[in-house]
Image (cartoon, rainbow, N blue to C red; front, side, top):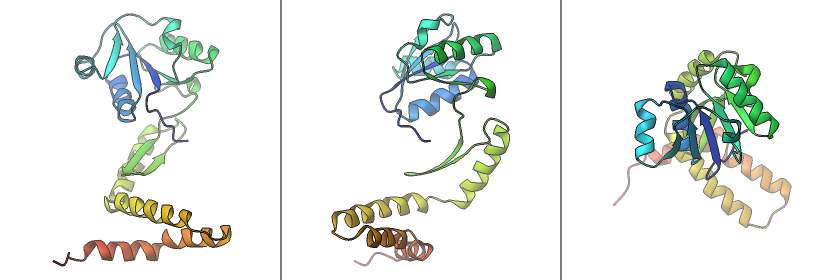
Length: 196
């Protein structure tokens, strides 16, 4: 499941390097971020200075998760991470405890992004190293042209949806425009020099 976090409150408990990586991803998705930790690495301090997030410079309290859409527990203490998970669970809030699959409602996939195309790889928390390796391999396989291709398909899809046709015909046409042959034709058109 890919979730739209734009404008949604997310809470990260912990402010070390692991938390900083999680925070960077959440900010990239437009989340409104609150970080709870007595100390923070420089990268997070810089984000506080720019107003990218709110830092509650103190120990975690159960009430910190109130109103959050999701919570990340990223401290070096399994006791605190479990307390964050339990506080979230009681309130029906999704929680991920870094490197602790038993205290996760969701897992962070390794993601290959090419514009609107996102390919997510997950091992369900069993081997983040394998997911990371597969992400690197897929990054080689799927170049930047895939982002342009997806944008092109979006335009064609909008045009098809605006036309009157049977659902079966529409489905057939949508499959045709996303076919390997259509992709190769798209690439040939992209390589063609622009005539003046």
